[in-house]
Image (cartoon, rainbow, N blue to C red; front, side, top):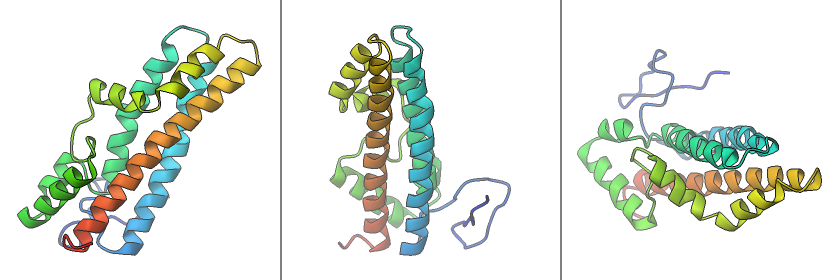
Length: 177
């Protein structure tokens, strides 16, 4: 399935495969949210499957890698990667950065490093600790570990989607909310 692409001047660039600008209307914003939520569910399922392999630390490494791919993919859907923000007019860039600071997001408009991914996963640390312990209990523990991993990744992804939504809404409204 392909999605409409839009550039700053309103033309489509079929070669790029990504949105080139912020969503401009509530309808475009809702489409970005829908695509992002589907992406979160898919990536959370894939990452949580690593809990089935009883190797110490493997699932944490997979979770870190998954977050390092998921957050930039969500940013791209909302037009909030560093490159996409750079393409905006200076006034729009200022609105994006102001709203990013106001909501306290450390992942919008930035490259996601391993350290940022680890800090983000610490926000769901209790679930992650239970996931580690649960995976060594036969059958029920592994199921619990998979469920906790899936839930933790979905939580992280959905929180980031909320942050992106707020930044875009602020920017669409011209800084007035």
